[in-house]
Image 1 (tube, rainbow, N blue to C red):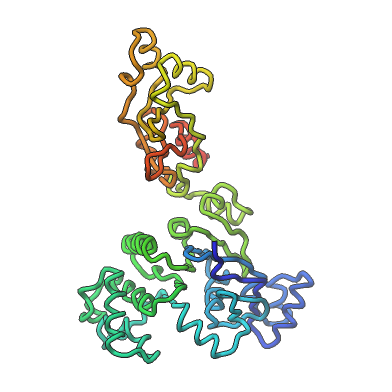
Image 2: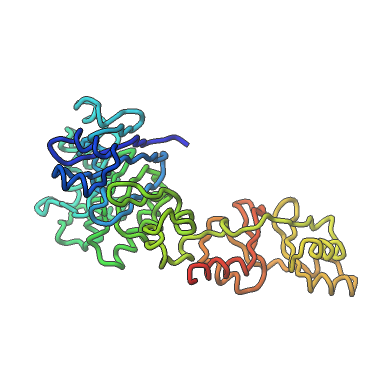
Length: 392
């Protein structure tokens, strides 16, 4: 997977003598000690990470953790005191102004929490404003603005004014403005923070839908762990300018790096974090054409199974329970006549919240791919066990 953004040992000191503060950090002094002795503030402390192309990388932290400072160093709005910030191998921390200008124009767009829309301009004019500043011709500006509005579901509102739109719609205009420049990277600094909870939830889902088609590289800043868990392919948790843990939602919830992370994740709804793949067992199917009830029964007894899935030409065909196989052996009935074709199935990416009603049927859940091949099996008790772990 191609790395799009790479931060290497990034520091940011706010003050008139950053080298002094960096020296004290290297000697092991804390952020608080450095401020007390020098009056300088450690904003970001030795942060390193990589963001893959097409990934949603969420940086989560409370106010003052350094997350907003960090995201502004990605596009050069704030210059690091030390370290490298690479975008496609271009170090925006040390490149010339002309190169930085080109990176901002061609590669990066930013979406802020506050919409910052011009009230006297139409929605389309707001979306096209950045293009106008860059000297894009009027016809192309209109075409790209309209295309961006279509992407965010506002294709018919180009002639409206911002005060005629709801808060969620205004934030979509802000997103469209970022998309209109056709960036490779979207930096989103708490873009949904000012929205009502229901609208915020809708915007999160809309962003996920949009990302499925656009596949942009997104760095998303939030103070809300639930938002981070919903949106992030990878999540980085910041505290006091440092990154204390980087991982997937499942990794962070199941193995918090320290007590700070554990406190955040303690009340997380695990059903909205863990997927079927995380609790799946390897599939042990039998071939329908070459298996009779006696062989199916023996297979289940050997492996301690209550049911076994059957495949036909490599594709899932049905499921046979231990009880039904016993009956078939006793009554000399062909296996295909007692096989159940109506069975619980899901994909490996299915969340536990969606597995729960399937697990209630009491049958193992078949995980299948797009071609109905069996990828794994989830036992109902595994679903309930994972959900109960979060309630201990």
